[in-house]
Length: 639
Figure 1 (cartoon, one colour):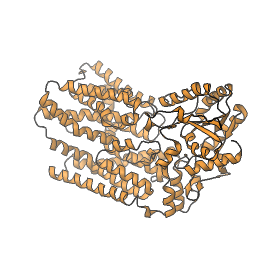
Figure 2: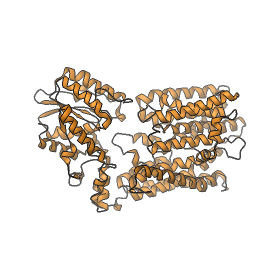
Figure 3: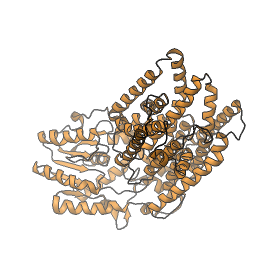
Figure 4: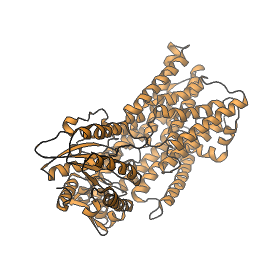
């Protein structure tokens, strides 16, 4: 994110804003580290946006008012503040990616590197947010999406303010407020109708930055009274803290939900313009201010460290997960401090006397260097010579993000994901019955959709219908915060389709968690009252990293135990619990992946020679789906 734009020696310097920045970056860091008490820590980014909008808006407006504004000078200052630390981080991250990433992963990294270099990573990661795309834990530059939003703001805001000043000098506040309200309205609508685009794109985030600019325009009242000033700043801090604690990944965001932390940041900033407050003094404490001063570097470095710690244990290996988080936190603070002192500060404090032309040349050289790095990785397809050919072949199955896999899942027709919200689930296709065959219905999330290809290929005497959607548990009542498409699909299946159509069996599968079992019990009881035969699938064998990656590393290091060492034991225990529940209480047929695929401590990892059973942490490849279906047929559970 951003950092102090006004030097501490300046009489207009505000320590409380640095402190607010420190709070924001710590919230983001806590969220990325998976702190259970900070499930909404992502709102720290929104706080940053408001701060940046205020500081940048203040600078531009004051310089335009004094007839001193220069676009070249403005962009030169932005380069000095943004490029050096960003370039160093991206270069070091590229070296780590070369060392630890598999060829396919390195290719994807190269694309993100190039998009980050040209400040369009928010657009790139929007198009990489499909269901079968790589997980966030394998994208060390994912956090640069927010930098891209700010950099796009820095391109257009000065041009807009110059135009307003020239053609509508007396309507400046009205025009900026109107655009902010319009952006907010689009954001509210998009949070429910197109959440991925709303999250990543600049036009749905513009209102957050413009909110800060509106403070600089004195749209917010001056809190000259100490009581009101303290009340406003305290309310602002409470808004931020409550959002960080209450929000989570299921919260429709940004939209209306983002108004709470953004308004909180705005109240703190606006109150501080009129004088001191208790919150202002708290935020001005030296430790918090220092974190704020290094916040840009801390934001830049913390996420790559989290990614590479997860991928390779680059900072510590074989230690307790919570201890690993502490190690990452300490290392991030240390590296951020070094980056701030030896990379940021020399350019910000103008220790390097550089003319405008030299600054732009340095920026162009940095862009060229990163362009060469990214293009080389793409041209060589991820430097596959680093790995044995067999490892490269296995690694090619990572994520299975290809049209073949999408057709096997029937993405966009009978399997809906967050990327195809506009796709219509068509019962005439997905729930069409065949009077000449047994009619069975498969419902659930992606862990159900993965079974359709294998079951429909192996059980040719069955007409297998499908109603699946990513992240949707096949239960009567849905959890709090469940996506609207889940509620619509499951309500239709349970309350419309099953009431009016006879089926020979209902196949229920999902990525189960222990918290799902009470809802599952109620659902099974209701289905049995309707006289519906049920087949329940247990949890899949799952790993803490993608199975093709683990297999490739096992080949490279000649250590076949690597995949087993990364198998998540929790799901085997859950399988045993569900098996007992299905047999003793629910009295339904139960299919256990563990019983079919595992013997003692060894589980099948390949569907065929060179073909991994799974494409990621737990989804079956096409070959894996067919193998699982054959195992089910041979077991006699489905006939």
